[in-house]
Image (cartoon, rainbow, N blue to C red; front, top):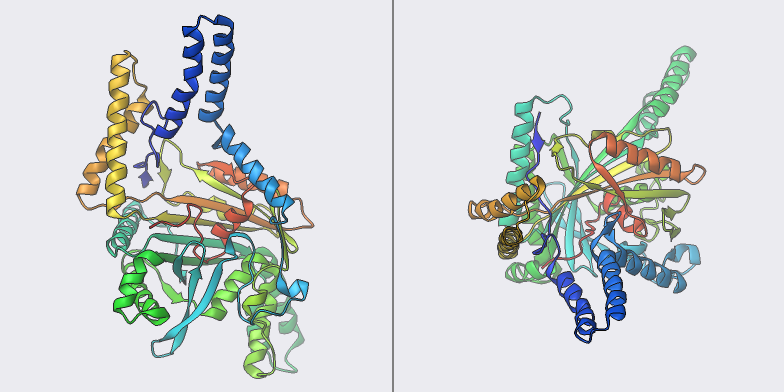
Length: 501
């Protein structure tokens, strides 16, 4: 059994868990109370004190992961976006707008600023790897499809080895001084039987025995309804600010950036294949990435695309429809409690790590569909802090822990066990950075996608139950389900934490 519990809050408050900004606002808001007391206006002071306590509680106490003011800001932004029509998406193809050049991406929400470029030819096959550019975040990403045997039957020693390999891989990414985030994504979807149907059609003999034909047809129907297909992707992201200088030395322009990204691809692949036990790994070309994105928005479209690609290999006049203008949904709407895209609804939730620690491989139940027809997906994102920022954060965390301990000692307040553990982790963080470890602030987002003919609220409850069964606490991403869906299901390097230098 491999248990991981060496984590702490991403931001530790300096005063009993309260950050410096909130503490300053609370102190300034208390000044009118002292002014009223100084003037001996006792009734006014009591009223102001009550208002101050209520405002402080709204600012400090979390409600489902956010403060009350945070909820007010989120709901206000959501309402304004709805009034301006920003929460509704209609694709250019659905509107009949063909003015923009073919091949340009047309995606909703946080994906609207994403562009996909064909990289220079690579390797003996001269494959042109898809390079993802996010204009709003000013980042570049590359995605690979991977096959991993899993750790369900692995011994504890093997799990320890894989955990150390993952830690070493993330440390190596930080040492490149280029990669800012790594995303591991897994999607489990009911098998559509497209590949098996193609194999049967290609290997069937005309006029063969009717019994064997009927047996194979029955097997295809049974397997398609009882089996699931798992897709695994890994994406690394490089900010433009870090890439620009290295790209200039490599020749500048898009080709220079592609050369640096290709070098990082080789480095990332060597670590994944050697230490983490990746059985097969292939960097996605633009058509392959298109299939991953389109099947992410509409899982039911994958079989038709696979069939079109097969017929295109026989007849070049067949149009497989691999145009990025139709990669996204024809329409999408953001609701408070779910995300609607074409004929599908999705609900996303993030995972809160338990205090007792997380068992390696515990997320497996999250990927198990509770009923037929639903698609489960989750992504674990590893934002990698640069060394200078990590040192500053470790210093602030240690100073905050020391200040909190001193205040409790002055006030003669006995610290709770959780506070002592948190302070010890804050003091030990600087020592780990001095040993060469990197500072990672990972998070995970899970999503469930079902057809609109089914009640998405029921499936969302099943997702929450699966997360709790895995030993974690679910936290719905209400008002932000579109961003959660993009992170957990669409392998284009989207990060909920936004761009980093």
